[in-house]
Image (cartoon, rainbow, N blue to C red; front, side, top):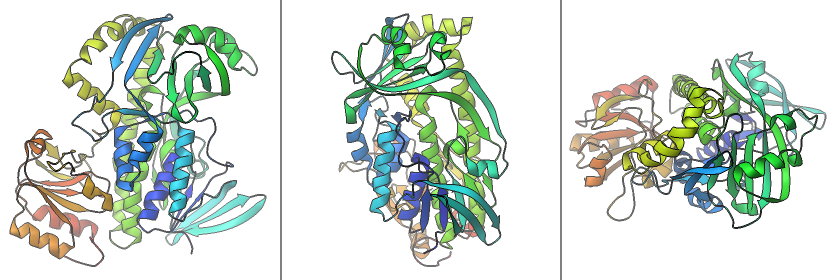
Length: 510
């Protein structure tokens, strides 16, 4: 069967895109020029929003058990501990995953490859994209494997092929931004003494360093800036940084599994879509290490794009739906790249601002702030990506309570021990009412084949910002499309008509 979607690149972004498309019943082909999952990957943090998406797919709890919950950040400068920031359950009440999870990208990729295989889709390794053309009928690509050129036709092509994206280059898209001056290292090491289960970070002028635990190997992942004397060497190795690194983090390294160096960039593509071709993940945007946002953002791209492609390919939505992918994701990517760049520049700056941050704000102010619930919740929202919203999207409208169209659906635990995220595992549209649905709304939902979930009103729903008896139209990616305070149908009819939406298995209309 010819693929409906050809995915170039089998990192986390491409794999999640393939998994969700396969779950939607879309024929997908995924290729990667590498021989297998990455060995020297550096993304470690899996945030709450990614775990919420994984819960939709049924494997969030498995991922949590494979990783390590980070309960604290220990900050150091000049070889001394200066502050401890408690992270344990900092998002309590906001998400079923109120923590930061350490789960290295290489282990993460191998896990996703197996999940995709269970859906009947194998990654085609050692297969590169040579060229492609597109027209109103589809995309024709030429792949290369073992010196053999292979023709592949598909309806759409998705470039998830990283910072050096062949898809982006072929589309001749600008990738503006910059490259940080320093050379960075990443290593897997075994340290002496008790096993570390927290994040340890060193803040200093041009001496940024992090250590996080890796459960699968009982090792520690080290990430940081190469010392100047080591960076000047033709082929620097771990022994060249050991004398500087060990005092910075207060560790002794007994064993080195692997060591690699790399450059860090901050860039955003000028477009995320050209015709039938899309960019996602590092092919579309790359970030500084601040906040561990890059991989999670790429996975968010995949989730956003997958259901829109599926609806269009299944004839359940107008192709104009695909325009909302770039409109929603490029604004967030630009803002995030700018924010992480400013934060990272401040952390490693030699200037007065960086010194003020490291010598006074971090050791004295941050620990006090994180002792307050409001500050902890704000920090969690900023890191976890649960506050990503699309208020200006053509798919968004209305306000009910504190929730506006485009917001992530707030998480609401139920008295029976379940929650309102249980229903979202269908990966499809649905209506939620927290209180009593009107007979008119119930009838319309039935005619539309649109599942309607009515939850008993609770204080937890009010605390989450929901409005009693309001209706919320939920998209397949767990965002609120429409917030309808009086369960009014005009907005719902308008959205259905504008995008020719069909819910359920059959055609319906109101």
